[in-house]
Image (cartoon, rainbow, N blue to C red; front, side, top):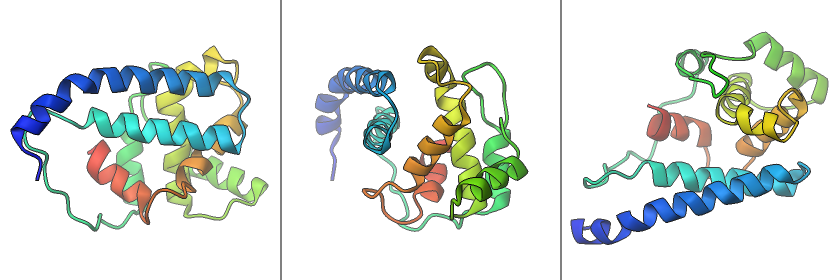
Amino acid sequence: MITSDVLAQALPGRDNAKDWLTMKIVECMANPMDEQTAGKLNAYNGAYNAICQWDEEEPKQKSSSPEPFSIETAKEWTKGMKNEDGTSGPHWTVEQAKQVMAQRGIECDPAEFWVALNMIYSDYVKVAKKFNVGSNIDFYVDMAKAFLDDKDAGPDKLAKYYQYVVR
């Protein structure tokens, strides 16, 4: 069990860890995007998001099973997105995401792919534009697939991410 003393010792290191992870994310974005770079970027982003969840109170216990992911959940999530380009809501429609999936032979839950595609856009469009890949849908598609196909994550990654990070 994590005690308040342990948290008090760890919290000052949180900002240093966030700065280091931000630097690593920027380094990844400066490199040509491939599967290895996308994997690293996904890992750094996951660690950054985990650190951002910390607060100064006792961590909340989380259930081991997230609610099943559905198109309704996907619509609720994307409706509330505040995109880094100043817009809000999904950047692409469900139909556009399905079209991309069909064109590229991507096999996964369309609701999950649609959310992941829009999530990557929402969070990284500013950085993507900085590195001249912001208008390239291939970047967002590859990043969404890397997020969903993360070999280090257990099952239901997107449902857990929504339940424990987004909500």
